[in-house]
Image (cartoon, rainbow, N blue to C red; front, side):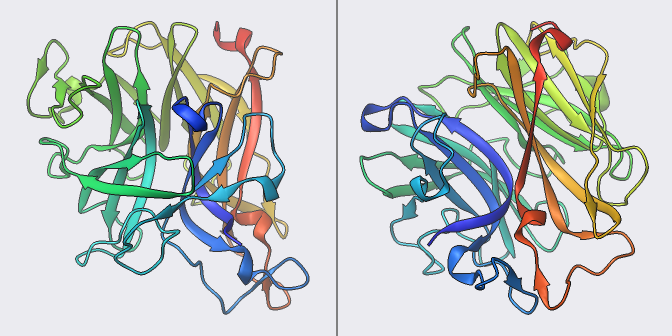
Length: 335
């Protein structure tokens, strides 16, 4: 049946050939519809089917689940065609995130590691579009896109009017409560040749020192572009169930900053059986223009909360493992 419950939730608008107007959604750990029981729940003894997946929405206005299908990978290493990014022999997870389309190719950043720890490696996946659902997939490793510098380039990819693709990454600075935002770039014709901003110039190796950051954030971060502005979305720490549970936005006219001061735009009020639900993975979706000058933001819940069992009567509720969306007026942040 395909992916029916998952986290992450980046969206990549497509314009190539027969896929023009469609949107590719990127998930991390995903449950398959075949795992749903007759009551619409998952068995507590079950586990997600894929470490990642990607689903193709027919248009930005079509939200009928049965109209959206998984793309599949040719020659899957794990013999899981719906798992687009292979899990490496030295890793337990392969979690894709931000991506963009260039011509008939889609490029997606992917973090690779163990457990819930920081990635041990990261890569750039190249997907070749066609008019069906079976796509060719290739793993690339641009020089400098390594984890030795502790920058995870999953925060955002933007095709800028200036002719570059900007890739935003973060480095944690405060035990999961704060981060530094960094930026790299490449030309669309040269996706393997990245350069990295060091606060004054572009260089061939990343500069992970705080002096090279373009902004600071809370626990998690996403970056996108709309109406001539780079938009930063960041959220409070969502896994320890603190009372601070807000979403903040800032903007900049330049990919290297400076950004405006963070503005609180929403407070997350999600509960799991009476306790705070855990939340994470912020994403901005500027392509989903509803005609009311509102920006679509999403985050994900996790099956768990603090001080409460995940399961109820032997079942897991898929509601708590699906993307949640809110809309923020453009005027609130000067868009």
